[in-house]
Image (cartoon, rainbow, N blue to C red):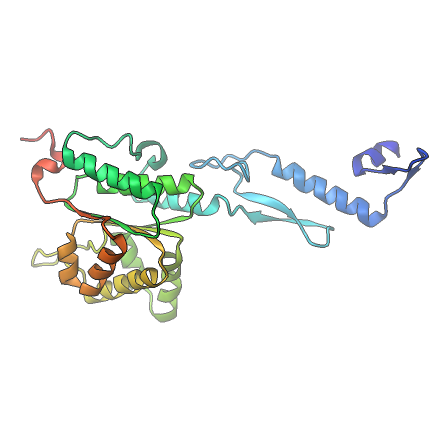
Length: 278
């Protein structure tokens, strides 16, 4: 009996005599002990080191009545893991380890300037947006991902939207289903749209987005514009080209970036993927 008393926390009065806890109190203590034991267990989830759930992905929570407990998804890391998983599935593997500001190669003055602009923004978004426009191979995805990495490490929730693949999924839904699908990207604390407005080439060789794609893009951009939600863009279109596609979209991006909308002039020599090719 004394061992049981020690486990459930039997109390002792001032005269040294022991008295039993009520069955209800004993039950609550046992339930709490079980929940605490689970919450001390180490998990094996990869990609993010979470101190809250110890990489299990869930925590044990005692019910209000104290008679039982349930497991709940860890809010501290679930969104981050989802973001990183989506990046990996889209080809951005090892983003936390490799897509950092320090690992962004700087050999030209223009590279130095865009890295500094990205670092400054990541350190203090101050309610603004950030956008990098220019050809493939200039490091847009690297720097934009480094910004999101900084946010993730600061415990901010980031949603990653690879435009070309996600827009096809979103277009396949209609009405309420489409709105439900858009809800996550429209309301994310931080949204990163990679390759904004990029689409498959048409028969005439152009890559301009369709009317439906522009409509969806406006819906996302306008919602985040109205609600002043932090947004990061990378796009192979120049800002001037986005303005020609839809002036309302381009105008909102330019206004919200407030100096953080950077267009890099096209030049094959700036494509790092072609640096060893004559």
